[in-house]
Length: 293
Image (cartoon, rainbow, N blue to C red; front, side, top):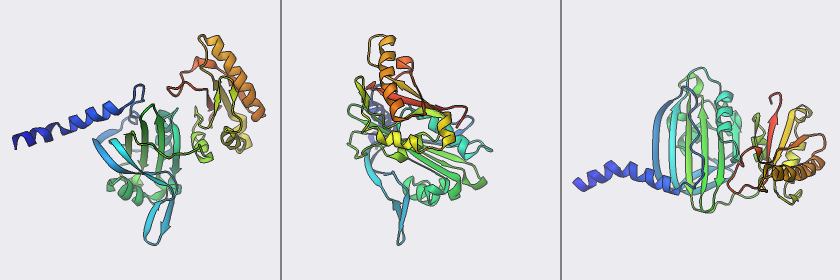
């Protein structure tokens, strides 16, 4: 019994060590809490079938489920916060989207597009206190791939209809291969829903842009409204070269190809003046809407 008691006492610490050991070198930490929020739960555990929802919901007979779902095994760290009174859903959503800048967005929904809040709170996260009016919720998933692991970040925001608003953040590190597939136009548009950040779907190396494989990104940008396109500015970053001058020259070559693919969009070459969004230091495109989105 004494040994069992000691095991129970140190089990949370053991899980923390396991979770930390799986975190790849250079991986980003969990998103920092929203200002003036209150931590109400923090836990770490091994999960074998985490329910990862990557699409809008479907209803069939009495069942509600994601049109696209994965079951993922790994080490999960969960934090839940009470949000300060008086904040808006959009203010909280934009804050956490900025904290995950540089990560690939797999899915995002806002308000009634997320479907049933009861489904998210009870069926996905098993936390009934997250139930809200369907119009007062938001959810997104991002992924960071590394050499032998992948880190998923799930954020669910619940404004709870005038009661204490909450946000849940799950981070899951897995060694299992995930069948995510090619970047979708919805992922690109989700990234473009904030004022600035990195864009998914840009395929290039120091020799040039793969226009065919980058077409989903280009089509999503071309499909923006005229007003958004006039405020959109793209910055191409190439990290190939021993000196900043080399990276700027490489970036200019890539930027010229992007300008041809996106006539009328302001495209600039900024080399390695901004740190790479991923450890592989592949060419990347950052965007900003100015003045504002």
